[in-house]
Image 1: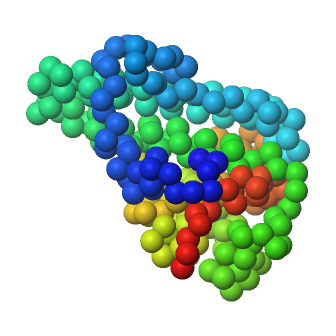
Image 2: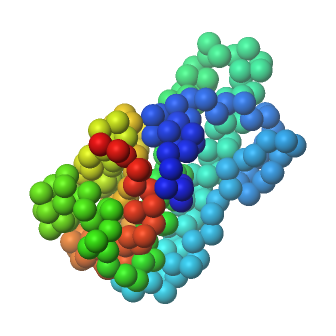
Length: 235
Ligand SMILES: [Fe+2]
C-alpha cells in the first residue's frame, strides 16, 4: 500500500474484488502470524512504534492493537472455514452463506485498522506544495474546506469510520462515512486517510469528547503515508 502506482492488489481491494477472490487458502486451522504450506495467512502488523504518541495513551493504543489483531485472526479463520465448506460441497448451507456475509466485516476491520495506524505517527504537517494538498484544494475548493468537512464527518453522531477516498476512475477526493465496515463503501474508492471513530478509538482517553480526539488525530497524521496512497490519476 506504499506504492505510488495502482498495483493489482490495490485495484482489486478498491474495486471490492479481492475479498471475493481470496478463498483459495488451504483449509487448516490457522492463527494470525502463521505461514502455512505454500499459502500465506494474513499477518498482524506491529504498530508499537505509535506508543508514546502525543494525545494517545499507551493503554488506549494497546487495547486498539489487540482489537485489530482479532480481526486478522478472524479473517484467516473465516477464509479457512469457507474453503473447507467449499471443499466439502457445503456451499448451499446457512453456515456458508453467513460466513460469506461475515467476511467483509473481518477483512475490512483488519485492513481499515492497518490504514488507520499507518496514517498515524506523523510529526510533520501536510506539505502545502505536495500533490495531496493540491488535490484536496482542487476537490474541496481549499484545504481548509476539506479539513472542516472531514472533521464534521467524524463528529457526526454514531460510530464508524471517516474515510477520505479517491475515486480511482475520476480522480477526485471524497470524504465519506462508514457505519459498520462490512457494507457501504464507495465502489472504486481508494482509501487515502482513515480516522477510526468507533468508541474504542477514543473513549479511554477522551470519554465523550470526540472533538478533542479528532484534534489529537490531526496532530498525528502521517501525511507522507496518506500521500503515497494517492494514485497518479491523470485526470
Ligand atoms: Fe478501531
